[in-house]
Length: 233
Image (tube, rainbow, N blue to C red; front, side):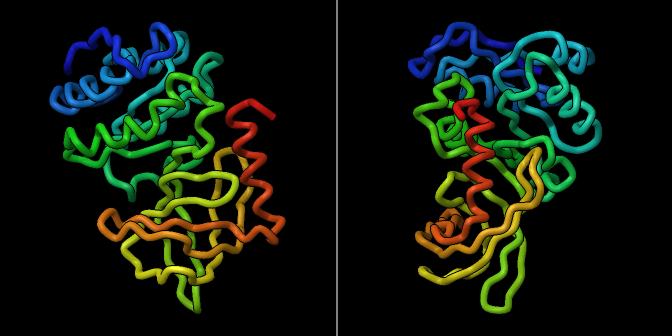
């Protein structure tokens, strides 16, 4: 695996911000080290003692190879007195998220990891890692979302969520302005359902923006979850 590097990038607002890398090969670790470094985040490659170190040492983020053994690592992170609320990234395939969705994985670096796509994810999420919470009201979280629209039902993956809506990654055709209902499980909460509508499309990235219906009281649960997540309630 790649050795961890000291980072002093322009995005850092806090000294010694650290991201643990667990189960990555040398190539992936090297790419992610370079990406995190640009935002002042120091990477630490953990080996066989990963569970113990994640339980005892303080980190600000953790990148975990999804698959065999990943759940044990994620459980160790969330049960740690120091790391229970840190940002978690997965490395693997989006369909591997279902098994670990309860641990609150924020984003997934799909394999094989490309430098430009990895940098895009780090740029979009680094404010959470460096604890600029109040400037970042859209929370990156990759969870399974069930969609019902005009008699159709399908599943897709979220990319970000806010009190007002969420962005979804899907290959389904969703016309702008169409009404739908979404159902999803946020970490630590019962299932959330809300009516909504398609408010923007990014076809090139297979991204769709959904705005929650302001008259649907069920969406308040999302706001409560975000406030708890950011500890600003």
